[in-house]
Length: 202
Image 1 (cartoon, one colour):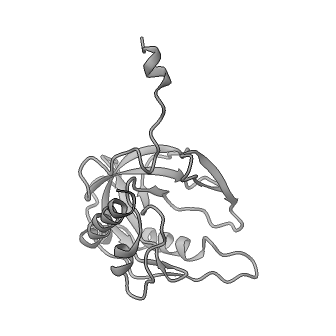
Image 2 (cartoon, rainbow, N blue to C red):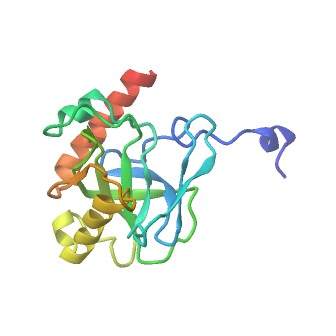
Image 3 (cartoon, rainbow, N blue to C red):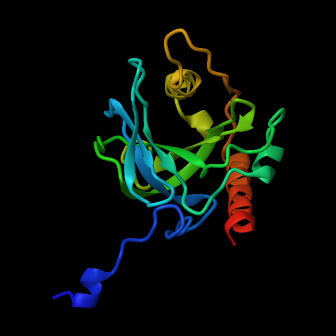
């Protein structure tokens, strides 16, 4: 039976109150905000730690993988330095996409993810890397070690989604997705985002 004190214990803030992962930078925690089934874009309210509605998906483009962020990371000045032509980072936690064979149809969850690569993404001139990972021990994706082990179709879907997910009718959005990189650079981006977090939040 849980004690009264345990019942009253508050949930840790998903960004600031959780660890980066069990074995970073190769094995990290991913806090999932949206799933491939969401017609609404949810995201973490950074002040309260609650999930909020950001906006309905305006187009028919849906995320092709679980999508969220790595706790205790921050895309600041040093993350920006890793990407050519970037004017710093986007000042958000580091984004991550996680591939899973089984349908996970709810967000606001935490999972263990093994890093296999990433997509260099410039959002209005700021570094907004998308780390690509696989769910730990996944029956289909669990043996993948490098983004090159994924089919071209999977990588193309991820790249296309992030190239278009902010598009609105009759509006121009400056998002540029570059060539995928492997786990070595992805781990460097994660380590640098941890450094930016520690320098920014202490």
